Length: 98
Image 1 (cartoon, one colour):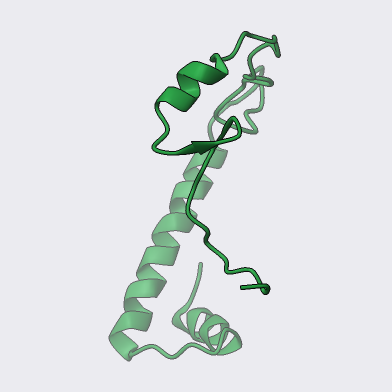
Image 2: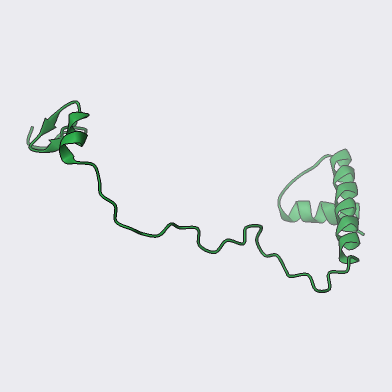
């Protein structure tokens, strides 16, 4: 059983300060959690496979298969401006030469 002094000691180690009523509430909550865990330990789990993660999928990646892309002319047709077969965008960083 967790006592109020235990909660206060751990709070001091963590450099936390709590009001008296908060310490009392924490003590009750921690004891409830410990009771729940003790109750769960009573359950017979013989023959039950351990679950280490909720998602048992090992590899969900798709097969890496080359697929034809979009033709350059179709892609460039959607660009606002192009130059020499590339999409032209405004300069973001000024060059030192300017």
